[in-house]
Image 1 (tube, one colour):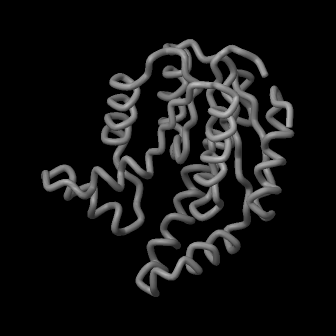
Image 2 (cartoon, helix red, strand yellow; image 1 turned 30 degrees about the vertical axis):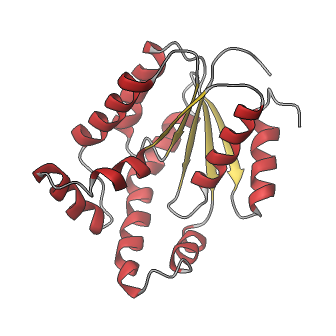
Image 3 (cartoon, rainbow, N blue to C red; image 1 turned 180 degrees about the vertical axis):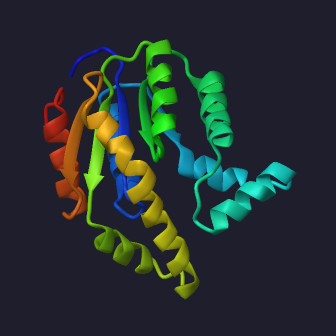
Length: 199
């Protein structure tokens, strides 16, 4: 595997299993002696909305509806995490971001600033209906149906343009992964496609 630090972007519908696949890649990288900085925006927002401040409460209201958070808040959490924690020699794994084209533009400046090469974009591709069934099967009750629909809607309207941006940008390597497989099969397809690994 190459020694130069690498950035990986996991992107896909809510329910596609991208978080699990990001964790498997991180585990592999660490087993190879790599240092990894894992930035999961979903986890950070779940922690943030539990706070008692005014901004926390407003963000929680959006979160409860399954909506998208405002750009300034997203960027604040990203930037704070990277500024305070990056040491400079880690692989960077991003899970659940970017979610809008303008976020992808800002993130592009991050890769340039921190001197990452060609980031690898790993798209866990699953049908909308499949993702909705997976989310409903988690057993959170009928009150989740509207939230799930909202999340799938914003993927179609906001995230799909991000996918097109990465597919057509020469500064990124884009990998379309079949997410309708077992966890192990998805992981193996990712590892085989992104290269630089000996399985």
